[in-house]
Image (cartoon, rainbow, N blue to C red):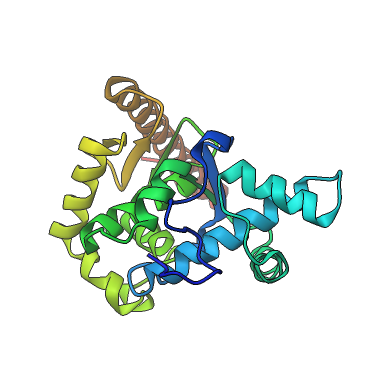
Length: 250
């Protein structure tokens, strides 16, 4: 994907020796996904830089060279241009402190590094990792399309209008396209999705559909009960106000 430069993430043998890989996931800030549809190569490279540096600083023992080697071994990356890669990784690491995180499966990173994916595949990749950043460490989470689109675009906070999104991503905010992505994630990416009679939708990567529906209904019941109590308090306040003014309460 990156040609034959010595700076390439992958050489002719792929992403390095898979026998040495220890990482199941590459954890990154969701902002690194920005521009993925326009410059997939650049985003994949930044994930590579970020991953190497974040692992490098977690390794406390050894020389800089040893620590860098261990980071490469951890991800199965080839050892190239240590100083340059760490410099770029540090820049990204410092820039995106305290950010919502998402985890890219190591095998999926290799798959998308090859550069033979359609734009729809890439949109699904974005949506999958956007939803993972929304669910985070929870078993399930409720969301809506605006937050989903925002995270797909590498934004931390939800949007108010699709005009806030990058031009390329706006295409996937069409109802048909968004639904098509969700169905693909449901059928082939392990997403469990429920959106019947709810504002927004519920998603999980751990629960089965029956369990997710149960959790959604629990929340809905609590919400209905909360609204009922709020209405009662409102009516009580109105009645008390009439009593205070000496009006009869009918």
